[in-house]
Structures are given as structure tokens and as C-alpha cells.
Amino acid sequence: MQEKPWPIYKIKLGTDRDIEIVESLRKHTNATLRIDANAAWTTDEALEKIKVFSQLGVEFIEQPLAKDDWAGMEKLFAESPLPLYADESCVFENDVEKCVNHFHGINIKLTKCSGISPALRMIQNARKLDLKIMLGSMNESTIGSSAIAHLLPLVDHVDMDGPLLLKTQGIEGLNISEGNVCIAGKTGLGISFY
Image 1 (cartoon, rainbow, N blue to C red):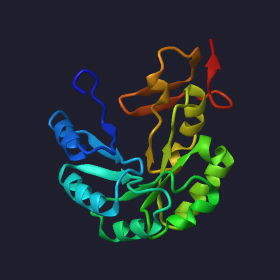
Image 2 (cartoon, rainbow, N blue to C red):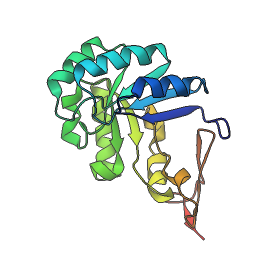
Image 3 (tube, one colour):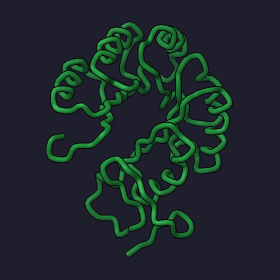
Image 4 (cartoon, rainbow, N blue to C red):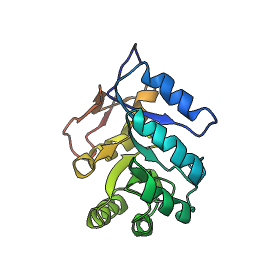
């Protein structure tokens, strides 16, 4: 964090030391922290942890409970001091409506929902239902992340760090620097191979 500071960090949790981890990270940065619990918490555990995280400047929590724990998410939605985003609970177009009154927003992943067209329909539906939208990624290279980048004006948040984790790709046209995303403006995805 000190060698290469970023304005936003997504912290993957789901351990018995979650609070300790975030407290330790907070000592080293004032950056925005977002937490992905990876469906690892129970409802009571989530409520306890989220209350602490709200005091540590966490922006939101992604997928706190198991993907099909709708009763738990309804309770958490009513009591959480932080916004809650669906990930595994919202994969396909018909999942968006289920998230109302359970989540404040959804995370759309092009590789899970089947591509750009379904993602656009999910974005439109989420907006109608007053849900916030994040575009996410798993291990996309510059190619997949360039597709994500073209949808950025339509969403509230993005998680597209896949290309940053690769040493070489042989692709140019997408630049991610200090939290800013730029595309080359070429045709198609705006990328080229070298």
C-alpha cells in the first residue's frame, strides 16, 4: 500500500480475523475500502462485523451471506449501516429483481452473465429497481477488461484489476493508472495486439 498506493482497495474476507485485518489495513491508508465477504458470514456475524467496519470507513460490503440466504439478507438489509452488494446472488438477468429489499446494489460480471448484451439489460433493470450497480471481474485480461470499460459510464462502481495482475499480455489500448481507466478510442474494444 505504501509502495503503490491506490484510491480504492477491495479486501477479500471470510476469516476469523476479518476485523483485525481491516483495522490493520486502515492504519496504513485513508483510501476507500470495500469488502467482499465471499458469502462466508452468518447473519449475526455479518451484523457484528459490518457495525465495526462502518466505523473504519468501509464503503460497502459485497456478498456477505450465502447466495441463497434470502431470509438472512432481508434481515441484514433492514439493519446494516453499510450498503450491501450482491455478487453470487445475482448472476443472470432474472436474478436482478430478487435482489430488491435484500441488497442495495448488484455486481455484474460479463463472464458470468454471458456478455455485454445481458449486462446492459441487467443495468437497465437495476436502474428501474433503484439498485446501485458495480461491474466486476474475475481474472479478465485486457480483452475482457476493455469490454467492461465500455460500460463504465452506466454504473456506480467498478472492479476490473485483472490486467494489473499480469506481467505481459501482448495487448495495448486499455490503461489503468491510479484508479483511472482510459481506452484508446479505436474501433471495437479499442485494443490491438503487438
